[in-house]
Length: 336
Image 1 (cartoon, one colour):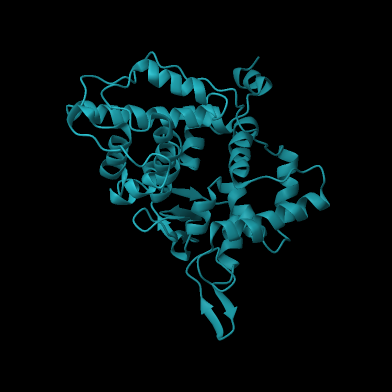
Image 2 (cartoon, rainbow, N blue to C red):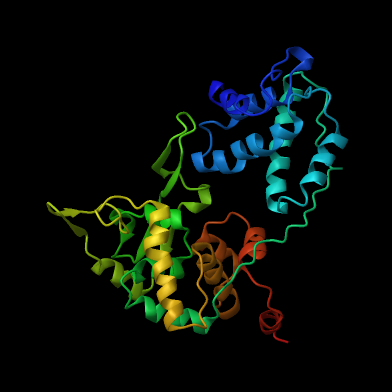
């Protein structure tokens, strides 16, 4: 708790954070909720990206030390009205979730009779969703063939075929590859994030995002063979060492996601685009997006199977984030 209070009091509101009884201030209640209900209960990356930053950067500076019992539904709506030109709809939804939980706890603790975060609250944003690019089937085939002869190609081939995230890719160890059965077993992810207790950045094996992310992914004969042939040792100054991770840093240890992006993905995409200017440079998320899109539009794969491949618990996420609308594909599916 003190860690968060210190983070807040370094700002512009240092005098009146704490009240007692029904006069308890919003900042105190928000920080207490954060430390009591979120700290050590979610992944560190989720803690910072979804909760701590929302509260510290946006919610507390707005509501400050206003009494938790005095905040109204109109106050909540005014907050979202003010933020519509600054934040995306997705981010605003995260803030609404934080506010809803904070005030539900305030009700449970007897600090107010009911929550002001009601069904009347409407979210809108003038910030357009980030544009996502996806390769066509022809571009996918070009990139695949290029990856087979590129020094960093195997990393990209795994992302292309499986649709896994960067964290999942870098978390893969040799025990996760079952060559005999041609599968990859996703058990863990590798992330770089702050330790909420120390504030220091750490490279950690973090739990997967949800229960659906723990999964087995079948591999094509080609990719399974490429993984099997990948050396399990790497040369260092003192000789060579056996690596734990399939995709590792030059000295054999786990790869920092940022370093992997700069040394592997960025260089691969630059080289690919230079040789094939019509093939866009994609992010890891766009490779994931491409996989789902092509499976829907060019493969005989149902949405449930795609959700299982990507580790999603519902089809709404697939439809909204990964699948481009395609009227002609729908027409063919219906037999028109």
